[in-house]
Length: 116
Image (cartoon, rainbow, N blue to C red; front, side, top):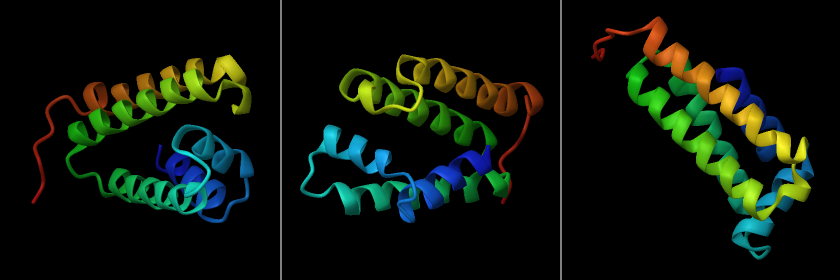
């Protein structure tokens, strides 16, 4: 899971190796600040990767990941479907990723306590 966030954040958005991501941000949030906003989103995704790797607050992390993935993908599906790599199937892959995150956070670690 951390690799997904790291690759999308660092490679696709911070380094701008996949210009489609900036085009999606431009479509949803406007072109004026698409470049810096895309990089900020990328930095936030790198932060999510670090949080996943830390193993802290697993359930909160899982809920946060699921929420972000579903909200981002519904917005993209509704407002920029033509720019998505797998078009309408992106939402399917987002749902599968959300299920994987749910499994990790709530099935593999059903009784985790927060660490200090």
